[in-house]
Image 1 (spheres, rainbow over the protein chains, first blue to last red):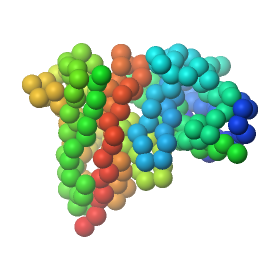
Image 2 (cartoon, rainbow over the protein chains, first blue to last red):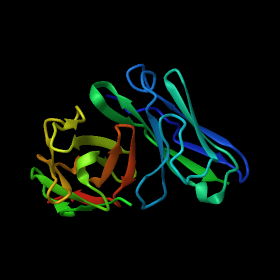
Image 3 (spheres, chains in turn brown, blue):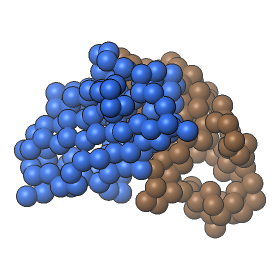
Amino acid sequence: QSALTQPASVSGSPGQSITISCTGTSSDVGNYNLVSWYQQHPGKAPKLIIYEVGKWPSGLSNRFSGSKSGNTASLTISGLQAEDEADYYCCSYGRYSTWVFGGGTKLTVL
Amino acid sequence: QVQLQESGPGLVKPSETLSLTCTVSGGSISSYFWSWIRQPPGKGLEWIGYIYNSGSPNYNPSLKSRVTISVDTSRNQFSLKMNSMTAADTAVYYCARDVDRKRFDPWGQGTLVTVSS
């Protein structure tokens, strides 16, 4: 069970949009609509921001959106704000009822 | 509102067994799946395993031989035991609710476990 592949870093200016990709295989991302995304600020626990590919937890900003095509899921953050600077992790349900995470992407707001 | 809190030793010696407990407050432990997840310093997240009520747990294949997860419904707690600890197991260990096998929410604040003699 290999980790999902994410870019190590992305950056954008306030107000812009950025997209983070998350590539898996036909045994995880490609086979289940159970991709979730987590935001993690330094020294803090991860926080759920997207689940089941494109659903929002209640009360969360809709500046975050998710999608999937084949074995690749994507997280888009629109209207970038300084507080969005954090690490982002994707996660997918996988073979044998297990979970696999991506390696994480560091978002820098310029 | 459900809250989770990890507890256990912050320092474990090489070859020894790690024991951590996650206490669930604000809701019953009986109706959900519960997972352990870890994060080595400066690295990504790794799912360790889950348990549902008193059912059979399921583990990450890469850790399966060393891990045991159990639940104590009377105390609203679930636990992690990992044997044969090495420096590579140094990490922040999180417990999290696995909602309907679809997402992890919420998470505990995490507890740093260092493996060192």
